[in-house]
Amino acid sequence: MSKSRYQEIADALRERIQAGEWPVGSKLPGISTLQEEYGVPGLNTIRAAQQLLVEEGMIVTKQGVGATVVSTTSLRQVDVLHLLRTARGAVVTAIAALEAPKRITLDLNDADLSFVVTDALSEWASRQRHEAQDELADDPQDTTAASRLRQAEIADALLARIEAAL
Image (cartoon, one colour):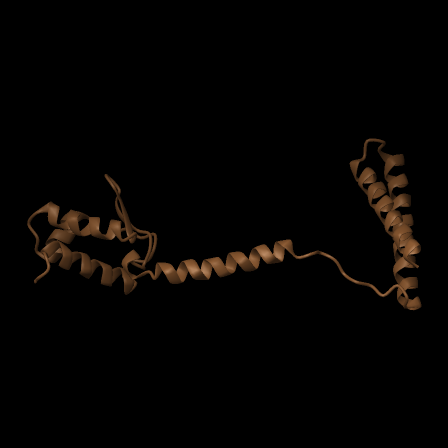
């Protein structure tokens, strides 16, 4: 069974889009230009060909604007099950990454490591308090100072947990 003329034109336009003649975002020639190019006297043949490409997700048409390429892949060529399986795998991996515990394990029995961690936390908390005091002296409404004080409190709480674990 032979194809209808509009199907032949749709095939030709699809091939030209996929060959890169009209990249995504570009406009197809107007209907009258395509009529001349394909030797078709009626508008409806070109419109029917374009409608096939619309249904395949390759172009969008808008009255007064024309047809714009939105994809170089026809939905007829998409392996939907493969894409869904790939997407499912990616989603499962992403969810696992989000749910993974955000923690590290430190051997606090290692005296050197314990000293470095506690000394660094203590020094950092002290520096945050001093900087907060300086900022508050300059501007009593400074929100950065309040944030520094909260962070110093968190460091102090962590130090207390480390001390309790030793």
